[in-house]
Amino acid sequence: MVRMSALAAATLLALSTSAHADCLAEIQGIMQNHLNAGPYHATMESDMGGAKRVMEIDVILPSSFHMKAENMEAVMLKEGTWMKVNGKWMTMPGAISGAIEQNVKAGMANGMKNVTNAQCEGPQSIEGKTLNKYEMDSSSEVSGIKAHSRITMYTNDKGLPQIMIIDGEAMGHMTHMTQHITYDPSITISPPK
Image (cartoon, rainbow, N blue to C red; front, side, top):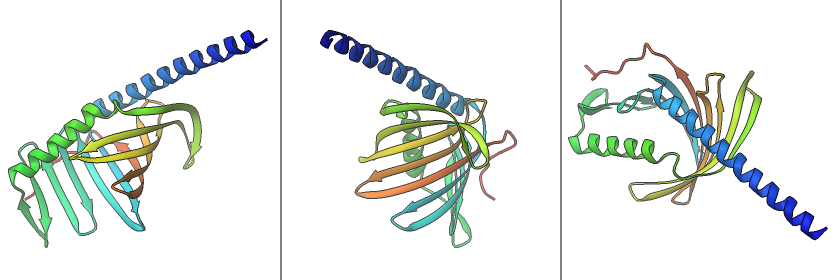
């Protein structure tokens, strides 16, 4: 009887390890789809210690971004970074553009390396839609700052992320962020005028 229980436990462990690996591979495929999907718009709502913020961002990977938030607007392109300060666009030093681009590239390259506890939960109802739900833990380090996050991701029937909910901690601060993603091939990003 004890042998049978040990065999059953070993079999369950092997099956769960295989299921975890399959789920992680599925999530990696989703992230690759996302990187190749073309331009997208994201609305990000964050709450960091009661400080709430909404940011709208257009993205053309790997290096073009147009971000807008209350009292802030920025454009980042390969050829430079601009910020709107007091209603006027200012060119940021090249070192800032290079550092931002380096962090984005590092994030894309290392994004899936530190994912653990992957769970593929299948179709779920959220915000009046049926989307596929995934959950995972992630850890990262950007500019020497370590962050740990619990990520809940919902994808559409094309295997593209639509909603991401991230509960993170960095430097002792907790952050809750909800991101809604819309893919739009008509998005363009150019230097401000």
